[in-house]
Amino acid sequence: MRCYIKTEVVSNPADWYHRYVALRWFTLGKRSKFANVGAFAILIFDFCITVQDEVEWTWSRPWDITRVIFAISRYLPFIGSGLTVYDELSVVGSPARGQAENMIHIISIVAAEGLLVIRTWAFWQRSKRMLIGLVTYSVVTVIAATSINVLRNQQLTAVSNAVLVYAFLTLFESVILVLTAYKKFSDYRKFNSSIIITLYGGSMFYMLCIIAITVTNMVINAVFPVGYTNLLDTLQVVIHSVLASRIMFHLRSSHDLIYGMHTSSTSMVSEAIQYRQPSQMQTNDSERMNDASSEV
Image (tube, rainbow, N blue to C red):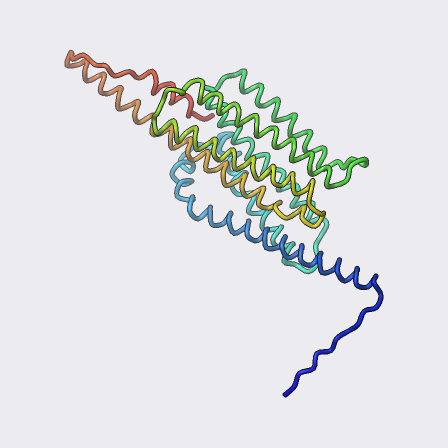
């Protein structure tokens, strides 16, 4: 049995161009769809493997500003990413839903950056000057980035606006990384403790990953065609939420571990004094590390 394939001859070059553009946009749309769905899957998977840490290090804590910011950074991306995936899989998108996704993504990233600010403030022994400086710089960055993203500048295209937003975000995250690295190498340069390596080294590695995804998005918006601009939008939110939460888990687990070591050394000193035995235990370093890992 023979099969005959019907072919259509297109003689007009304009028709060929329009068909090529339509196929190109269809391919880019599928890539964007796969990227957003994959980022949402990463968010769900990370939640499943870190929910035990969240229960241990967060649920027993009182509701303060840190826990509120953590809850926003942890759970709001599920709504924003879910809406993005639904919009990608639906046939017809909604402008109102797109604006809601945009605002949720902004709030989620701001909350994640808030956790990084709190973490940096804790590393600096909760200095009031550092807190004032970080809060002021954070407010200026949020206002500048939000104004560019929401209030479109008529002299700039949407792509240029996105590049400026990511540039502000990259600068802010780089400052946070520099402050953390400076504190680590200035105060604990001679320390080889595994706690210090985990506390500062892990945080700096996660910060580098966050900066990497922000720079990647900035390059995509600046260099690649318009069809690629939304390729990593969901991944940007997911990476911020996932890594900021992990930094907070490490900070609180290190704080409890250092507190336990400090309590143990204090009891040993008390026991030595009681039995009038000389003790060479020094607790100043552990107190210093305890302050460095304390949160609001």
